[in-house]
Amino acid sequence: MHLFKNIILTKKQYSLLRNAVVPRQSVFKDESKLDINYIPQKLPHREAQQRLLMEFFNFILRCPEKMAQRVILTGDVGTGKTALAQHFGAEISSEANKRSIKFRYVHVNCREFRGALSPILHRAVTAFRPNYPARGYGAEEILGSLMQVLDEENAHMILTLDEFDSLIEKEGSDAVYKLTRLQEMRQGKPQRLSFIFIMRDLKAIEPLDESAKSTLQRSIIRLERYGKPQLVDILNDRVAMAFELGAVPEDVVDLISELAYTETGNARFGIELLWRAGKYADASDAGSVEAECVRNAVSAIVPSLRRSELASLGLHQKLFLLAVARYFKENKDAYASMGEVEKAYAVVCEEYEETPNSHTQLYNYVQYLSKLGVIKAEIGTAETRGRTNRISLPTIPAVELEREMSESLKQEKSGAA
Ligand SMILES: Nc1ncnc2c1ncn2[C@@H]1O[C@H](COP(=O)(O)OP(=O)(O)OP(=O)(O)O)[C@@H](O)[C@H]1O
Ligand SMILES: [Mg+2]
Image (cartoon, helix red, strand yellow):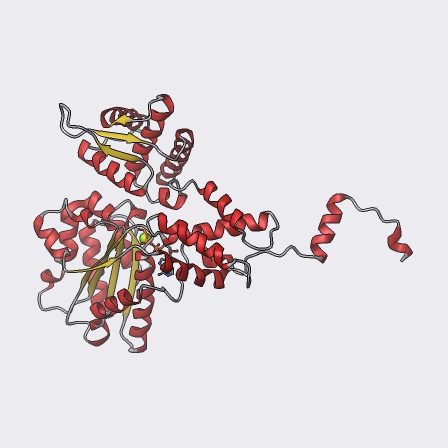
């Protein structure tokens, strides 16, 4: 007893000792289950689409050489397209494996390669030939190699092209034609390669020429936005996996689901909120996720400016947003005309040494970015030059958007170097 009586601890020592004796209880049990790349074993409310995918592709398990298939998977942001495809890929791979069928599911996010066909195809070849050289071959050659490798291995593949719109934007009809007409050029040979094309909006294929378009429009699976009760189910599953028992009260799950529902039924937004709210709970030592933690999380995310969303924007979409931010930083007006923003965009392009995109393309960006909720666009009255767009920035401070975009572009530029 005497030994301890006269020991005076510094504040730091005291807190170290206290934490060692009474470990602070985190609300999380396994945070990784809320990671954006985590694919859960069950996808509630997507069972029907899962079965449909299996229907479309089950020939691979029965008579893989006889056919090939192309399926389009479409739906708004956060409706589970990527998760569904990857989940299905794992399932069919394991079924093929059980039947000793040589099969690979390869999932490529086209945006990761800025829509360039060669590196996308390269990824597919490396599923069998990990040392296939990354440079020096054109798309057509790599495609030839892919078919040759599949023949040599007597194997079959589903190649999923996620965010397919970026490939269309970059490579156009030619590439789509090459991919989809492949089998016809191999008359009499076994079929080996099927595709899943993922895009948010079917409008993405509109710029393609008729024949390329017609090779795509066969089987379309549409993922509708989640309703609130569905989001409750999805989030409840994650709560059970990621949090300590009782750490997230029922009405808090309800609140988050409500918020995700108003955010276009976006499950990703719900999961991100859940994670952040948990972080706030831990930071304030609350012991459980309270509604106030959710409110803190919401205001921190700034609804329309989410990093996961921004990261997936294309180079010129970012340049365009930076121009919008600069315009509103320098002008007090609440609205900008398309022409004004276009001018600002040209200046930004010059600064980043990029050739500006066409007016039509910028018009597409306006529509896309307003769909994401980052900017707001209105078709104004017809003026001298047809449609005029009034553009505004409703929820994000221009200064913040400028900072985010500059940082993101800096990363993109240094990544490309
Ligand atoms: N039915 C579901 N059950 C469980 N988790 C889901 C479900 N749907 C979506 N998710 C989860 O929500 C998040 C967003 O889903 P996903 O990435 O598949 O959306 P997406 O449709 O590909 O969106 P984007 O168009 O932005 O790429 C992921 O973390 C995913 O695991
Ligand atoms: Mg996705």
